Length: 96
Length: 96
Image (cartoon, rainbow over all chains, first blue to last red; front, side, top):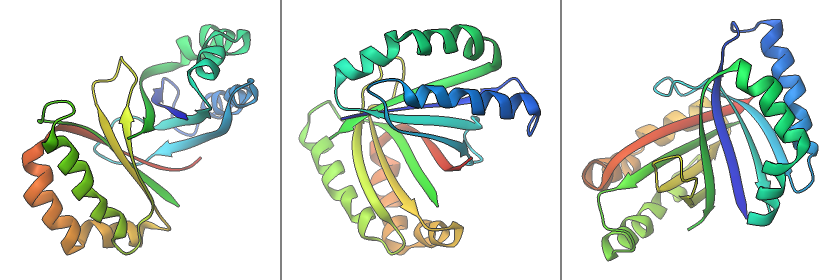
């Protein structure tokens, strides 16, 4: 099992409609085949400069690659993520 | 609910006994009152330069502060973490 987490900061003002729109529309990612346990969260540790995050689980590497290559993921990245996210960091975890 | 995640890189060589010892001894953190769902993992995203992580959940802010101030946590930080961890980043998440 692989848990994929991405933390990020949007270009939009805090609490803005554009921020809400981005988070709402990103929920399509959770319905892509192979994705389970999709979650959205706020990052609240004051020493870490990212404001939001998404996390999701994949059964294996093939499921993860299927998500990465899925047209709905690619179009979300191209049309929304690339324009609205200021910076981000990915964390992929596997059990020790 | 707050999920606390820390990703980190050890000063120890990959696969070394010191690495194993650190991960094994860190399991005491999971038994501190207020902590639930303690997990250890490898960070495997190649674009992110942290090799391990721990995550745990707290019911609320008071439980999190109780953990931070707990003698077993403080002694682990002072005796092990401060000497064996090269760099780290914390991510604390709350539902959007």
